[in-house]
Length: 435
Image 1 (cartoon, rainbow, N blue to C red):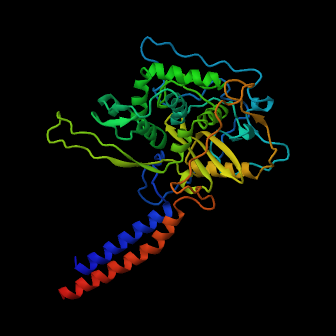
Image 2: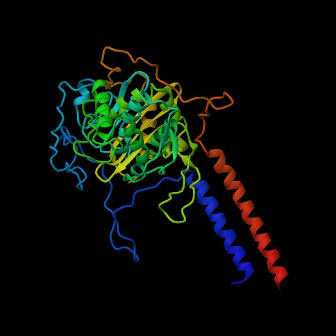
Image 3: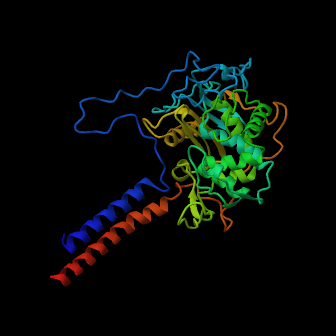
């Protein structure tokens, strides 16, 4: 291949990469593969039209849908957990006992293309529930249950204490941030990995300090019970599916609101990127070398793409499907949105959350269909004011008039063609020298 052709192709590839990166935004987010087989030619079939799951008949009133795998089969000798009791009357108000779409009187129809089987929009500060679908229906939380683990850990662990990574941490199933045996991590760094990157290895390291998985899960369930999140039962610290795992859109909103009373939680869900430590070479592996530290980024795309986003938590397992909880601020109001058993069709979960947030912000300021219980009991006010994300290092507040990274994207879109042009001129010069 001629030098000129090499230069032109390199320039085109780089230009395309820069443009795609600018349009797609950073950091990248992994999207679970669909069940469709790879295409081998023109398709002769059409995808069935999308329909939002109907919950009017309360199919999940007592327990989540049937699992799709064996992850929830109890270990030999362990009992099968019974469904949690259903409180009556429904916690949060009479209308919270409904199972279909629940809206304030006179409210417009909900946005289209919402695939979440259950969802809810509530006011982070007042606890008012603005709109919901199957609010107390029981579904699996996946990694959003890490919000409960964060509540327990942030209130009981010394954040400056150094923890040594173990092989057991590194070997956990599912998403891992990259903890290695012998690595030295403060609890603050483990919380960054847990909340920002949903690291199951970080969840394991944190649970170990709480007395192991069973004791950590027991503490998470005690927190849920104290908050009157009665649809919630954790089975694993990380959110991996396990026997009896359950939550609801209502409960997830309750847990998130409680977590937002912890300033560090509010800070970490709003943090885009931090540096994470590496770990030493394994002497048992011939030729292994020290593993350097690396940056980790927040996996919540709403944070980068929605003006006023405060932050949140993502989740996914085969049984739970897509789960999501996040908050945003607009005109002095802070709303929380929760999604359970969603899919990446017809739009991604964070985009569904964005539409529901827009819907909530557009409702009347006194719109209400129910209420979240106060911390501890209905009669007790939260002991700690709800936190806000911290200001920037220079003391200024985070801009709310455009999505984060928009400036970087504009710079990339402008700079990308300049780089491409420079590469083309360089390739042409090399080609002329070789003629």
